Image 1: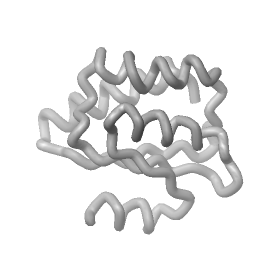
Image 2 (image 1 turned 120 degrees about the vertical axis):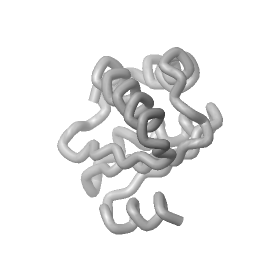
Image 3 (image 1 turned 60 degrees about the vertical axis):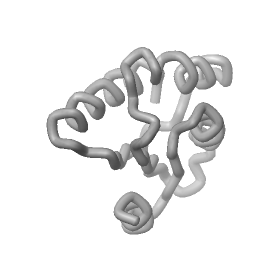
Image 4 (image 1 turned 90 degrees about the horizontal axis):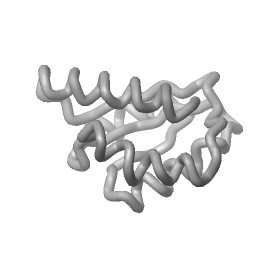
Length: 100
């Protein structure tokens, strides 16, 4: 996963959410380890998410591969930036959290 791909996914999610009144998102990151630097991850959460107006009142589940810890810092940074984000390796648990 790169910031460029994250921007594309985020913009698409915002557009879809606005059109369909969606406030919960499941981002499937399995097979896509985060390859960005800590600085770039921080910039993405604090600056770039605001640039494409990702809603802070939305819930986002990030589905990752078991053992993939490359997204752990992003979860922390997103939460600290005011977003409701949580990592999951189980799709059913992610769906349950989003619907709860």
